[in-house]
Length: 214
Length: 272
Image 1 (spheres, rainbow over the protein chains, first blue to last red):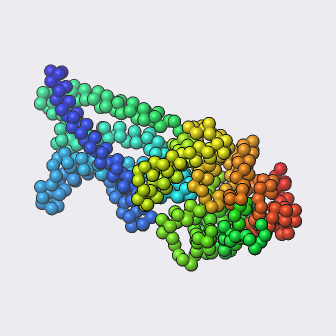
Image 2: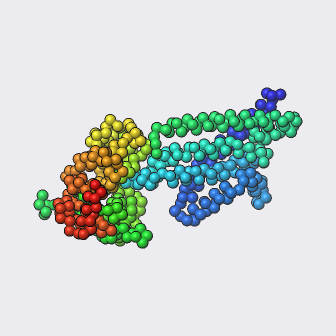
Image 3: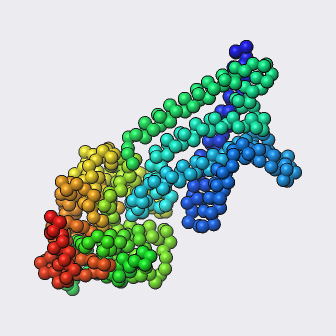
């Protein structure tokens, strides 16, 4: 019984991992694009980006998943995207917005002197950003990013709202089918293990960047 | 050298004006500097010294006026705004050493020196269609020069250290070497010792003094009056955005003409 449940839960866990990984792959770079938008000197782009971030951060992720899944069908009478793609799209957009604000905080915390030093040494804006600023930003945003990424692990459970059988949904299904309650508590161990590993990984990266201050 | 034989000035600054909002920070500042001269800019805080220096480096774009280096127009208000690319090339006429050093914390001392030089070498190599071999040679030349410069500022044994492992004085010496590696026509210092503990200013001032030569033209904004008097060949006293007095150290220090400069000196002495 225990083994059977564990195997079923592992199937759900695989999907949880997939949502987690794809969200990061999409949201980490997209967040940077949104950051540039919200820091743009062009007022229109800045306003548009800030408005977008407000809407995304101001509404529940669950609602966004539902909207991406059912929206296209309701509005355009098309087939829409599949369950998993809908979940991934909603997650990427949602997390990119949160990441973008963390990035912005990091970028704005770098002293103007670093940019100026790059400028007087004849570096281009792109070189200054990628060769000087970015590494310092990464070091500074690691703690809040760790926080956000651990939240993502648990947020993946929202995918069940469109019947994606991730870890929590898998447990719920077992509970309903077999009339046993313990699997739902058992999955807590999966999440704990996963976030535990992430905590260790983040600790390692922080330590690795400890060789310099600033 | 007699006056007739003197070449054209390296740096020519004409009627530079700059306002921040309603505040006029520079009100038509003009001066010239010949090759090998050391100019010290003195004056009380908020008088416009640093803004003038930043205008030279184009970190602050002036509102009016003209700046010429070796006959090359760096800035001319009448020509309008420069594009980013030209601005970059023009900035390279100047080197700037900051009050707060502004070393790149994630790079060790050696890489702080070579980073920009290597990027420029790479860009030029690409532009001139040079081979990978040429670039490698150029990198080797840069590395060699970096080593020499670090020796010159007395920090070759700190090559692999990170800025956070150095004292303020050492960091500033690295910053000086970093500015020198790009061979600027004019090297500028923005209060290079103001952020240092008193016992560390000496080592930095000695390095700056050691750079004085027929080839190195320097502009130094400083509060170190003794140093200015000893090292500078020309002194400018700025107050309220105007050059109140300009001359040789003897003229300015021994015979201050304006009331403002006399006040400034008496206050400077009070501090001690």
